Amino acid sequence: MKHNKISNDNCSVRWVIALKEEAETILVHYKMKLISNKTPYPIFKNNEETHWLVLSGIGRHNSAAATSYLYTISKASKWTSWINLGIAGCGKGNYGDLCLVDKIVNNSSQITYPTTMRKTNLHRMELLTTDVPITDYLNQELIDMEGSAFYDIASKLTTRELICILKVISDGPSNHINGLNKLKIRQLIKSNISKINKVVLYFEKLSLHEDKIRKKPELFYDICSKWHFSTTQMHQLENLTRRLIIFSDKNDIMELIKGCKNSSSVITFLKSKINSNQINWSKF
Image (cartoon, rainbow, N blue to C red; front, side):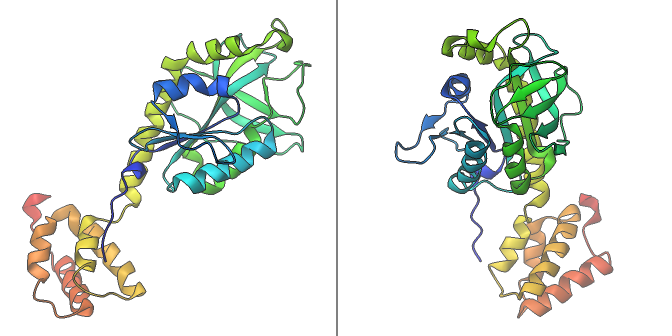
C-alpha cells in the first residue's frame, strides 16, 4: 500500500464569503487566485493549496450550495477549518467592529451554538440569519443572510471546533444600510485584517493538531507496503503502531519484523513486543 502525502491537509482553511468586495482583502492577503472561469461558483486558492475560497453570493441557498461545492472541489479533509466572513447589520455593536459568532438563530427559530476560540478579545455575539434584509435592529445583535446555512453544511464536513463565523458590523441604528457601497465594504474588511489573521493562525494550528492526531503513523504505511493485511488486521495494526511509535523508532521496528513471513506473524510479533515491554524505553 502506497502512502501519498497530501500537503493541503496539514493546516488547511476553507473560506465561504458572499460578496467579492468582502473577499478581496482576504484573496490578496493569502495570495489566492481564481482557478477557473467555468465553475458554478468562483473558486480561488493559493499556490500551496492551504487556503481555498468560494464566492457564494447572497442568501442561505447559495451559501449552503457553495460550501458543499468548495468541499468537493478542494477535497477538504475532516480536519480542515471552515471560515465564513462577511459584513452584518447590528443593533448593539459599534460600526466596523469584528465579531465572533457564538450562537446562531434562523427564520425557523432553530438555535445552534458553534464552538469558538477560548481566548480572544473579539466581541462574541448572536447571529440571526434571515431570508430578506432587515433594518429593524431592535434587540438584535448580528444580522446576515448566510451564516446559519453555512454552519449547517460545514458542521457535516468537520467538527464544530474547526468552524468559525466572523462578521464585521456594517450597518445599524446609526449607520443605515443604504449608505453601504462596495468601497465601504472593502474598507471594513481591510481595517480588520490583522485581527482576522490572528483568528486564521489559531485555526491553522488547530487543523494541524487535528491532522497529527487523526493521521495514521508512517510506521503503519511502511508495514502495509511489505505485507497484505485484512481490514480487521489493519485496525489492529493502526492501534499497535500508534502505541509503538511513542517508545521506539520506526526504523528499529521495521528491522525487528523484517523476518516475518505474513501479516499474522507481524501482528503477533508487535503485540508480544508491547506486552513484554521489549521496547527501547530509553527513547521515551
